[in-house]
Length: 419
Image (cartoon, rainbow, N blue to C red):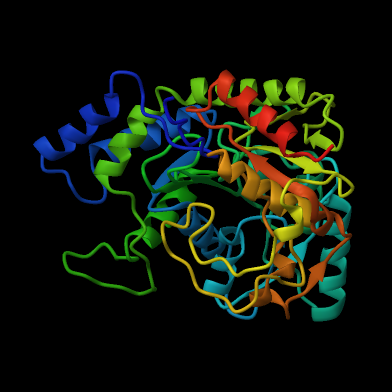
């Protein structure tokens, strides 16, 4: 019997005919194998058109770099505070600390799992009362592609005159009320990491409100070099520009982005159909108000704490000795297999069981306010993100995931449940 392929969460998929190779070859043939160049310019124009044409876009080396430069351009400096969604990947908050500022975490609303607008406003009022200063920026996140409540968040931000940096790294192509994420705030962060909706192998971009802000970001991203015939630097800059080769990959990927988004939505619908009657398993869906249009970068489920999974009695007994979750072999060995905030035993048992079936699944992001590195920073919590972290799991959804794969994944979940 032929060995079954491993089904990964989300892997990049090249365009039909390999148009990426055409643009990369052009870069080599013309010796544009450096940051900047014709592919970068064309990729930025493609991105500008994709997000609606009214904003400007700067291609950068990563989504993390985009967050960093956006905060810098918002005036974030040492000692400032930035409000950021707690339920997210660390790239949303780490750049705040790069700048010597303090992240102030805001918990989630239960339907989208994204920043709770009411809690956001409460946090703003409390930080002003306690520090005498407004937070310098607000960073909502499109968790797993799900749009945040753009209407309410922008209303609150405008009321207090605080700029918004939309972290749409996972939400490339997601929309709210028909408008692409990343175009509501002062800046919008995009990511083209190898597991995102499209990829440049690594890379990101920053959507800017206007040409003036784009120029400012480009200046910061090219070491803040002044316009002299020699190298003159009056501020600290960074080497954050995208390479012409990576941008060539991105140009090819833009030809298939709509197909990728449609595929992810199809996979989500199939999970919803096939898991509808599986007791104890609930597929997370977008709100049915008509405003939310998620790209479903990853599809997520919730496991009821009462259901039992095969092997559950053996989980969290030994420390992890190999890389988990795409860590590319990088792992910092720990002394204890457990922490004070971790997924329930049945979630970890399902992860291990699915791995035995050559299916990669993962827990949802651990809230940032529960990360040891942020144990002393302010947080405004309502328990939503911690509760979801204990019961949530991500399922494969990338372009390589076929309908048959989804059926196999669902059958494996059913097999894992102890009757």
